[in-house]
Length: 342
Image 1 (cartoon, rainbow, N blue to C red):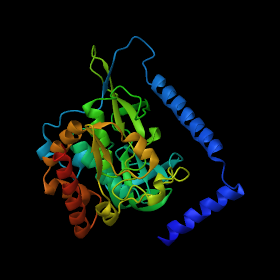
Image 2: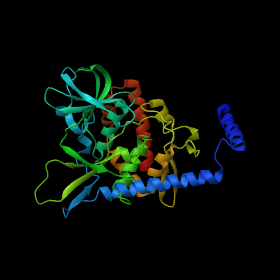
Image 3: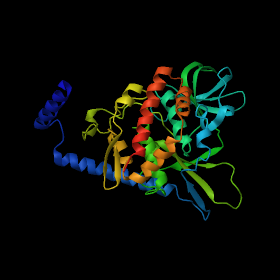
Image 4: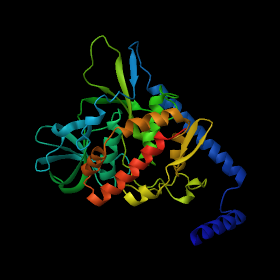
């Protein structure tokens, strides 16, 4: 409470002394920023259009007919896809995209991997399995306690993401301009992002890929998915996330079971549209316009997962048994809320 009072006093004094822009100038700045973002979105969407007469079939979701038997410990890549921690990996170079430290390595089977360090490996490994379980595409992610990389040294508590996984990148996509706007599939993906408290919902984290092997005579499949799920399973921000100057501050936490369990999930339902408690402005802008029936649909899919499957997803992130129990209870409670939406 004392911190809030200090911040309010600071803003009043700053506004009076001219340290902050006037409300008029601030409005112009915000409008200009929104205009730039809109132009960026339009450019992104235009870039995803086919450059020839080749037919394209956009895809976001496939019916998970084997949902109840899906293995959430190994995820989309399965046991056969996991890296061998005892293998001798070869260092290929550093990656400079994103905020987390990442390197590229190659194993003895000539498989290439992106290795991520920091706070995100555990939650990203888990979130990828939950999203995949109900029919959405994800990367092949595995959490590794320790491995030796020749030319780099020992890496600990990292995420290995399969690089040469049978798909090639086409482009990025925007939450508000894509072929699935208004559909059940996009609403379901938005709900999943709220479910796992993903507070970093930006175009750079959304990828369009196409299978390297396509059936002749069939349309070119473009798969739309979220390829960075690291900023998840904690809180989505602090109380000041609603303030104009701090709405983009990445103040959420990652992989914190207590923060996740303590945060409210559903905000309100108004005229058939459900809103979620996403405290960061960027997340609020992405998670909008979700129809109640679509949120309930994805909730019913999630409800078909057993507690063991959910626990297996967290075991894949090497969380402790106590932490896993807390996460599973919190997730089950959120799933029930989705089912009970009216």
